[in-house]
Image (cartoon, rainbow, N blue to C red):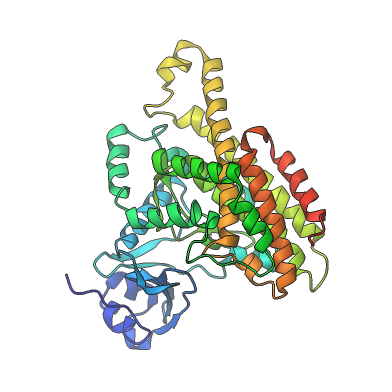
Amino acid sequence: MSAFEALTVSTLPVRLGQEAAIRQRVGDDPSAWSVDEVGDGNLNLVFIVRGAAGAVIVKQALPYVRLVGESWPLPLKRSFFEYHALIRQAERDPGMVPEIFHFDEAQAIIVMEFLSPHIILRRALIEGQQLPKIGRDLGNFIARTLFRGSDLAMETRKRKADLALFADNVELCDITENLVFSDPYFEAPLNRHTPGLEAIVTELRADRDMKVEAQRMKHLFAAKAETLLHGDLHTGSVMVTMDDTRVIDPEFAFYGPMAFDVGMLIANFWMSYFSQSGHEAHGPRDAMRAYLLDTVEEIWTTFTIEFTRLWHEERRGILYQASLFEDRNDRLASEQALHGVIHDIWTDMLGFAGVEMHRRILGLAHNADFETIADEAKRAACETKALKFGRHIAVNRTRIHSPADLATLAERLEQEIVQ
């Protein structure tokens, strides 16, 4: 294998110009390709390559965390996990992830479909766009990928082989285990927060119930190898138009609890909700806030409906076998088991969502929802409400029973005046 070399705008056509799959989609003359670096994420290089025949995205992992620099090394193999996760997600929910055209494991390069005119979902929500399909599309995506990647559906030997393959994604799991579940709750060196949050930060770090709950969620994350997860499913990992939804960037993929992907995703819609008052320069965002709460409910409702359909039609794994239930004319027992599984996902989802909201405000990697609010006092007020919401749903997760309960809580907190 040749030594790793990071791509640049000038070297990319030379290095990838001989790949037939790329030439077919961009153009036969690499010297005529137009290359733009567009990556603004925390970890990787991303380029748009355009030519006479079309365009592709080229993504390359770097041997360190781009957000921090070479002082934080990371293995290039994360692109291997991203590639394999995308292949599996494409099988489990066709049309919801970009098509892959080329993969170079040694150079950590993935060449994939250029999504246009798509934009990042987070940007669309900041701009106040109300996307009509997003709740159904994402609800179906999480139901299909989580169910079909688990022992509810997969053949046992294949699932265990997959578990072993993704178990090697150690370093990216380590990022989640520390940055999400531990660092926000003490004075970790990489933490940062908006000036004005000092009082609530001190309060949260002294909150025994919250710290214990965060570690319970970390325990579940580390120990419950239930299904193949996206692992970093938030509104920055979704690209959208009014008519199409695609999920990207599953390099954090690993086997973990179903509720983790659900909680991370929904938490980002709640953060968007609490950020809206910081984006009202051109008018009130009341309708946008209502839309976001409705979307949370639609994601969860769609998830449960599709998960239920898959339970009845595709439950062929080793868990809750039909031979114990339907084949014995005991459908009620099957429904009882299904209710228990969905209830556990709901309860754990709330815990993961609460922790996700805290880490995005107090940890290393923040959300543009809040970060793009220029007025620090306004940003701190928005973030304070989100921190309170996250704390409440995590600590009280066994006593919250419906999206309506959560909407009522969010609306009450939104009306509070933060001093």
